[in-house]
Every structure is written in C-alpha cells, then in structure tokens.
Image (tube, rainbow, N blue to C red; front, side):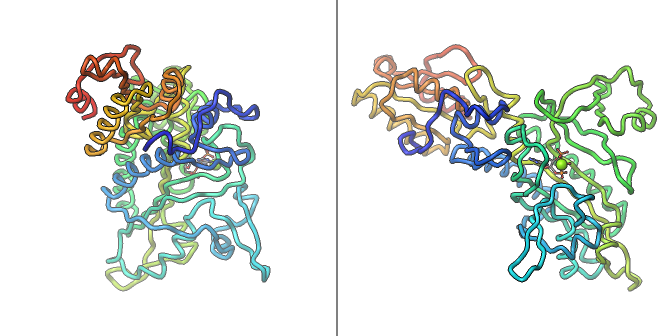
Length: 414
Ligand code: ATP
Ligand code: MG
C-alpha cells in the first residue's frame, strides 16, 4: 500500500480523555478510532493487525480439527433461561433489547448456550462426536469499567471455540490439545515467553480451569508466579493451589497480568441443562461433555501494543505487524522515485507486505511515522543511496542504520 492512499494520518497527541497507553498509541498511529469509552473502530492499519492475529489463531484451531463458523449476534432469552444465565444477577454484562412484538432478545456476550442448543439439531449419536467448532465474533458486554483501552472493550473481537465429547476423558484429552495449541498461538504472536498457563477457579466439574495470563503492567489481573517451577496461580485459588501443587507461598512472585485466553471444562452440566443428549452404543441416552475456549483477539492486540512499545511508538512483532516493511523515498528526484517504485514492485512480487511512503513530506516526518506505526523494517531510498548503489536499512528495534544491497534485504526479510 502507498501512504498517499492511506486515509489515516498520524497525530502527535492522543485525545485528552484517553488514558490507556495502548489506545493512546493506537489512536495516534491511526490504527483505531474511539467511538466512546470501550468502543473502538478498527481502521485499515488496525484491521491488518487483527487479521494477522486471527490467521495465526485460525491455523492453530484448524490443526486441532476445529471447524470455523459464525453464530448470531442476537440471542434468544429461552436458551439462556435453561441455565439461569439470562438473569442479570448471574451475568452482569448483558445488553438486552426487545423485538417490535415485545420478544426479549440478548446481544451475544458469549455463545455457550446458543451453540449447545444449535448442536441439538445436528448430532444424535455418540458416533457424531467429538465435534469442535469456533468463530471469530464481536462480543457485546456492558462492562462496568472500560479504562484499559482496547484491552477491555464493551465491544470486542473474541475467538471462541466449543468442543463436544462422549466422555469426561475424551474432553480432558482435547482440553490438553487445546492448551498446547494456545501455547503455539502465543508463541507465534510474540508474547509466548510472558504468557503463563494459570491455575484458576474451576467451577463445579474440575478443581481448576486454566487462564492464559500475559505479564502486562496495565493488566487488570494479578497472578502468583513460581519462576523455578514455571507455575502460575490466580489470586482466587491461591490457597487451594499451594496445597495441591506442594509449593511454598513465599516462593511465589506477584505480577500484574492481562487474561488473554481462557479455557473451561463444563463437564456434562451445560448440555444436560439444555437437553443435549446422544444415543450411546447400547441405544441408551448419554450425556455430552462441553469444553469452552476463548482468546481475546482485540485484547491481545492491546497487550502487544502495551508491552511492545517505546518512546517513539509501537513495536509490532513481525507476525502481527500491519506491514513488514516501511519503504521511504526521500526527495522529489525522479531517479529516487523510479528506484523506490522498482523496489516496491520487487517487494510486492515477493509477497512482502510493504507500506510505501511516497508522500512529499520531510524525511523526519516519514521516519517518525515509521516508528510510531511500529513497522519492523525500514528502508530508505535517497540520492545518497542511489549514488552508493545500496539501500539504507534500519530495524525498528535497532538504533543504527546500515547500507545493504537488494539481495541482502530479501535475506533479512526471509
Ligand atoms: P475478564 O476477567 O478479563 O473480564 P472474562 O473471564 O470475562 O475476562 P471470558 O468470558 O472467558 O473472559 O472471555 C474470553 C476471553 O475474551 C478472555 O480471556 C479475554 O481475553 C477476552 N475478553 C473478555 N472480556 C473482554 C473485554 N471486555 N474486552 C476485550 N477482551 C475481553
Ligand atoms: Mg469479564
């Protein structure tokens, strides 16, 4: 893409009412637009980041044989009544409305109940299981507070996956596969080493559930970390977990984190409540076991923006960056433009996502934009580089520029 075609402009100042670092940077760099507290639009640059995150998540969910679908945003009250979760005292984030005829509807904040109801029409026999389904969807939640920028939205993109099984053991096996898939996701997103599989409260069926908690100063959660044993424990289950895992409380380090993912074992309770059963090998009805697995796509983007940034702006990891290369041509010299056009064409031919800054603005402005947007590799073409027969290269994380050839550039970009 050429900068002249990008409608967003970077800005020096974030809106005065925006206090979170991730949103300040993302707004200044033109990735998101704040509609109101907790509600953000994703502009072309931001959308590219979301799509990159989704691609990684999609590939890993497909690897564990999950199928992608899209559920509905509007939900029926009756379905949620079956488990008691229509009640605002039980679920405090509901947005609700009414159809013209007075029928109550809810705006999807999660999809366990509707997907269990839906699957009743598609599976009858134990032979139809296991089934795993996932979607990327905008969830709506009437969150009490929304001060963490895109890390806590009232409208946000989630990947939610649901798996259905014949037995607790089969669910347990899949649950463990999902943990491994999530680890691969967070590694590929560049936050793997700071993301911990955390023991959290398990509800009625298992002693613990698991959260994926990413170390982040601005996160709203606290976990206790045993660095030696690589164990992380959520505050709410600390007493239980210390006993169970045989570790000493004084060996635990308290750190601020953001919950980037969450996996949950519902046992057979939810399917039982909603009336989902299958016929077993003996033709008798048997229970269905449900697992539920979330990743906050836009929260992950916010966490990366928080963690990977410096005084100049964002610093995207390669796999999620909106573009891999920022190509800047300096000056209006015809030869420079021609050389930059040619390099842009070469990068496109090699499928290297490039933002080509073809604007006639000062070099300092171009460099500041490249840094603020956090694009990993910067290439400059100027009269000086043409005379030298090379390109000027700088990595977003490095401090020095160096002169390299086209061939060397292609090697750097892999
Ligand atoms: P939290 O404790 O942060 O409110 P949750 O337990 O309500 O999270 P889930 O319902 O399990 O979250 O949702 C799955 C994932 O969706 C979470 O792990 C998180 O990454 C993301 N998520 C949850 N609420 C929000 C939100 N308001 N804005 C952005 N992402 C969210
Ligand atoms: Mg919540």
